[in-house]
Amino acid sequence: MRAVVQRVTHAEVSVGGEIVGRMQAGLLALVGVAKDDGPADAEELARKLVHLRILDDAEGRMNQSLLDQGGTLGVVSQFTLLGDVRKGRRPSWSEAAPPEQAEPLVAAVVEAARAAGVAVVEGRFRAEMQVHLCNDGPVTLLLDTRRQF
Image (tube, rainbow, N blue to C red; front, side, top):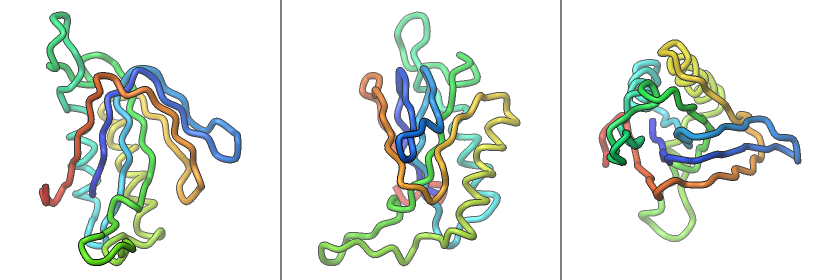
């Protein structure tokens, strides 16, 4: 699984003008699922997200996690993270998992984060979403459970 993780002061996700998720300070993760991903990848990604120490401590150093601060995790599915543009100009989606496989794995990330004690807001799977956020820092990281980068 891949994720683009952004530290945010606030964010909201809307579908067709309806707000489906709104959060204050925390991390917003855009999550993509590859064909060869499984439940272990979802568990690993959730564990990394809730323990990632990129929130500021009292001295202003990136030294705290969502668990330390009680921040919120936003999870938005985004198959385009698996787009391959190494050849030509049109992305290939051949490595992206089909929706029937990806949806339960994204849901597993959400459930594992909640089970760890983190508040989670979500987008809507397979919907045309608008994501509005204020990146804090800015701080943006790329995660990949296969450690390809």
